[in-house]
Image (cartoon, rainbow, N blue to C red; front, side):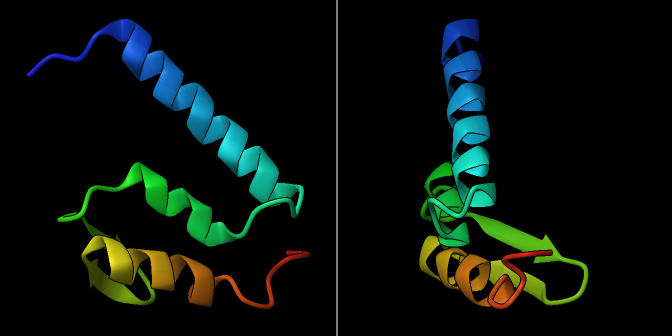
Length: 70
């Protein structure tokens, strides 16, 4: 299934803006969860497989705690 280039660019721009806000400490890391679907899974080399949007949101928040200045 192909996606229109404009949609892809808009999503990419939104992702970059979200990352910028996170790096600027304006948003928490779990804000990245909006880029995952309900049935998504994510594999982190240190933490292993994380399944489902809720689990990914928790993982993003919990795994980055204490690393704000990193």
